[in-house]
Length: 315
Image: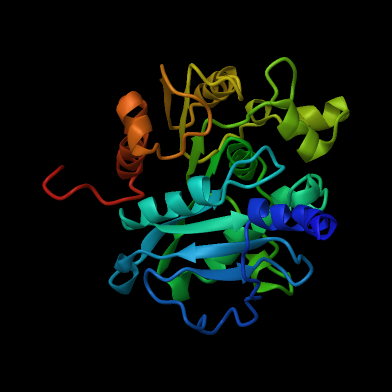
C-alpha cells in the first residue's frame, strides 16, 4: 500500500502546484459566454491544441453598469510552478474591489508540472490570453481599450515580454482572436525577473524558460531592459531592496531603460521585505507597513493614467 501511495505523489503534487482549472474552449466568439455573471469566476481553455493552458475570469459587480478595465494576470513561480492564488486569484479579487476585471492565466511551464515546455510557448499563451480578453470584452463588460497585464517574479517577466515584444494582429486570420491586438494598454510588474543576462539573472527562471545553456542571442532577446519599444505602454513597477531571490538590480535596470525611452512609469523600491509577498498578509503588513502600500500606489497610478476614473471628490 505504501508503494502504491508513493507512486501517486508526483501526480498529486503536479495537480496541486500547477493548479486545477476546468478546460472549456470558447467556441462561439460572437455569441454569449454561457453562465458568465458578475462576481462568478469561469474557466476557458486558451486553444484546442493546448490541454494545459487556460484562464480564469473574475468580474467586478460594476460590469453590470458600465465597461470596466481588465488586467490579465500571470502568477509567478520561476516558470516552474504557479502561485495561482497568492499572485493570481488574490490579485483578481483585489482588482475586482476597485472595479477592474481580473483574468488569471495558467500558462505553460518548463518543469514536470508543465510538461517541460520552453519559450515561446509561455509568450504565445500570454498573447492568446490578451487577445481572448479583447475578443470576449463585449460579453464580459470589459473595455477592450483598457486591457493591461500584471505579473509577479517570473510572471512579471512574462508580462514584460508582452509589452516589449507584442506580435502584430492578423486581420485575415481565420481565428477571430488572432485578428485582435495583443499589445497591453498598461503593465503592473511586481518584483519581476527582468534580465536573462549574468550576473543578475534569476537562473531557475532562465533555465525553465530557455534551458540551462541558452545562446547569447536568445538571452539578449528575452532581456526586458534591452528591448523597450518607443511605444511601450505605461508601467507600474516595484520590488524591495531586501529581495534575495530576484536581485533588485533587475528592477533598477528596467527603470533606467524605461526612463531612457521616456516611457510613463511609476517605480518604487521599498526598503524592506522578502521576495514573493503578493498583497502581504496581515502579519507581513504589520512588519512591513511601507511595502504594504504598494496596492494603493498601484491604484493611484491607474487613476493618474486614466485607466480608472478619479476618486469621487478628487480632481
